[in-house]
Image 1 (cartoon, rainbow, N blue to C red):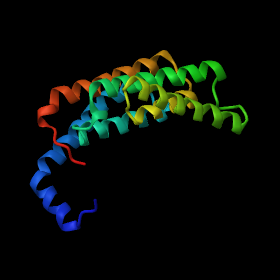
Image 2 (cartoon, rainbow, N blue to C red; image 1 turned 180 degrees about the vertical axis):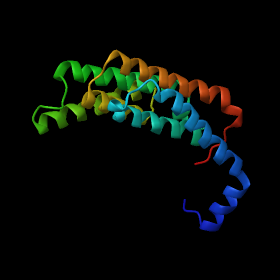
Image 3 (cartoon, rainbow, N blue to C red; image 1 turned 90 degrees about the horizontal axis):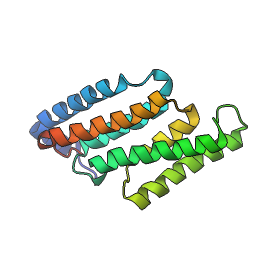
Image 4 (tube, one colour; image 1 turned 30 degrees about the vertical axis):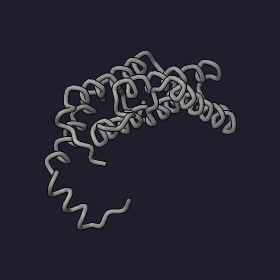
Length: 165
């Protein structure tokens, strides 16, 4: 559904406090979460940024629920680790092999999320990031802790959040 510029301005004027508050809350939550990661794991961090968007901009969405945020990222992590352990890191093999392993990690994570009712689209990016960049214990714990932090923030701040999408 397309809105006119006038409609967007009217909605912004009516709910500007929510737009600002929820963006600041997402920023602060990710600021805390990103202290767990180093910038070498930027691909995994990107999936958590997408999760923050869902949690804070679309709090009424099914995928913003704690079970989906934490469960989805856990599934993405496990599927990424499974593909990584079977195939090894994909940074140096021939391009077709690397692409195939990455695609399998994403497809497998989608399959498992749907079967376990933990659908969270950004978590497929977690699986991809794990296969592409490898995974240390710090990264694995960081993914879980960051997803948990987003889920807790959603639950605690829920009464202040409005669906902005």
